[in-house]
Length: 248
Length: 325
Ligand SMILES: Cc1cc2nc3c(=O)[nH]c(=O)nc-3n(C[C@H](O)[C@H](O)[C@H](O)COP(=O)(O)OP(=O)(O)OC[C@H]3O[C@@H](n4cnc5c(N)ncnc54)[C@H](O)[C@@H]3O)c2cc1C
Ligand SMILES: Nc1ncnc2c1ncn2[C@@H]1O[C@H](COP(=O)(O)O)[C@@H](O)[C@H]1O
Image (cartoon, rainbow over all chains, first blue to last red; front, side, top):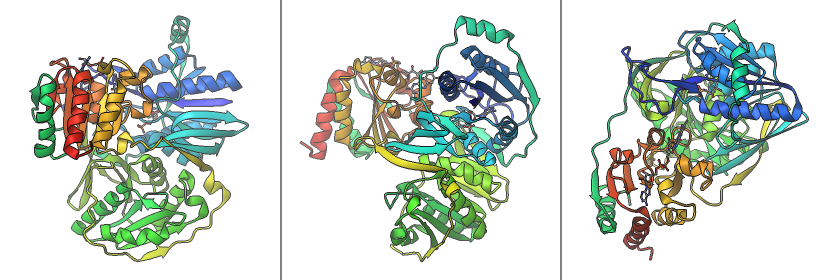
């Protein structure tokens, strides 16, 4: 079974976000980068599929040299091969998907995994765009997956429940928290990852269709008030919610 | 501007975000001169589709098939894209719900269109739509312009108003499709409903518990308060990771982004990842025994104290107010 996982390199979720001097993107100084949290679930699921069915797990990241850090993390978790589609240009989801799809077409995996969304631009689009570009079925926001004989039954999260979706392989899936518990890389894995090669390729060029005009911090919330310091404050709180905020 | 608004249904009822999308399309069309066509896809939806006129649709197109009652990404995407092309629309608007977020990227690729997901505001500049969308889980906002000929916007639920100004019925036209088997390459077999609870992502009132509650048993208090308020239950990641609550209740950067009218955070410290998911809520109440907890920085009203004492009293007081005793 050929298993591919597309992974992104994103600012740490604990990072404070400030607007950069161009007024359109974040100020990167002092921001540490991590593997996109949802992509760890995607890697874990493919490693489990490999353990069960045999095969190879290939991770792919599109971006600059800094993405190698995240590819190494995946190698340390135990994937077989890492590919960097090298590209420093600004891309929207469509353009990211285009380059990934061009490479994946050649690779032709049975299962292609993505994270549910990148925690930078929060698009939740790339995986599904790739599926459409490759003419493959997809199930997004997957919390449970069973693969047997070229078929898959996946549970995906929707408002107030789960949809049980049946599809055939090859197919695209996007991973949601709850799918599994990503393994920690072993010391041996970490050491081994340092010497494993990362294949570099040029990313296919693509056109941008969504242009960022500007970025701002959200408006600050008005200063709130402490209503009290014990149970005696409860009636006043309820009065405020009812009469001032009018939410109950 | 000619706009196609996708009107999501479940069980042959339009969802609230469907009305929000049709109404928003109307507002934009009114400013530019243009038409709003609503699209309803399902099995038995046609008979109720004319009501979309009340939200501003000039006409409704209905696509019906037994197999379309439940969502199929492949079939639905084909329908939306082909209708958009046949009607020569400039803009497609889709709710950024679980279904819409699944559908919009495929539709965008089929139409070679740029996609702006999870928009929280739309405005016109020189006759063009500029969309505001939160990024980094709401730690920043971007303004974007879609430059392709056809543009797709997915609108965050609960943000745009849906107001029906009149009960005007729109004419409904049936559009017929010949479906092949591969159109249903994915099929929803069943929907497992989480037992009658309101989903945090859809709720107008949310009561969230954090590690300050001390044990999963104490979440009963949160359940009772949520019930008294008619709201949903949320959870911090710490309590989800501890196995006290299911992950679908997690609010935050790696959980759900919510913006209810009222968000009550109990025993939640207000870590940056948590704040990212909820700080656009209209009113925030924090109950925490640590007066320096970061949650107070975003709270409208706070009580510094022991949640285990305050929450039951709050539930009783709310019940008294709402006459639920
Ligand atoms: C990659 C990543 C992603 C993350 N994503 C999320 C996310 O999506 N959502 C999320 O919530 N977190 C997320 N986190 C975790 C986040 O950093 C915090 O660890 C978490 O939010 C803390 O949960 P908490 O507030 O329940 O617990 P704590 O931080 O332990 O806070 C408990 C609070 O309860 C108060 N307290 C204690 N006893 C009482 C009492 N008797 N009465 C009243 N108050 C009391 C304490 O003063 C304290 O403020 C993420 C972390 C990482 C690294
Ligand atoms: N630059 C990238 N390289 C590889 N995979 C990516 C990249 N950007 C996004 N992805 C994948 O697409 C998913 C969804 O991203 P997004 O549409 O940006 O929210 C991520 O979880 C990754 O799996």
